[in-house]
Length: 171
Image (tube, rainbow, N blue to C red; front, side, top):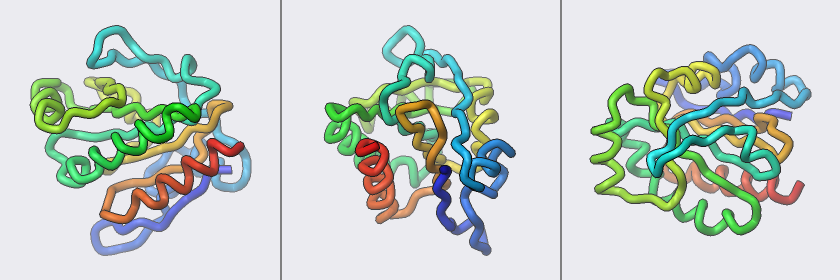
């Protein structure tokens, strides 16, 4: 089951799964598991990552951009989460959505992280996942199903991130 959360978008509240998410994710909110679209993206460290290769782990996909102020706020928190929960079967993949990587590289030089960074230069993957706000964070369970979606970030949201990660790690 996809868990949703009410978030603030401009001057109104909306349900995260209903905000321009792909139809399959909205359908998942009704109770059925929604398979996460597979993808392959180049990694900053070299090589590539395929979502299918991460099956068996709880995967957090965090779509971000260098110009995103909330992304800057949450990156150190995400890195701390990654280091704490990674030994328990958790991985975090930061997916940069900018067509050019130079700004992302500058961002990462100033704010290094230990979790892997992938580049979605053509926004193909962010399109598959209905990314419409920065940052957008999804959790994929060990079976490869999208289970949680959150758009934007404000201080305190990390408590819900941690709660959702712990819940999925226990399954």
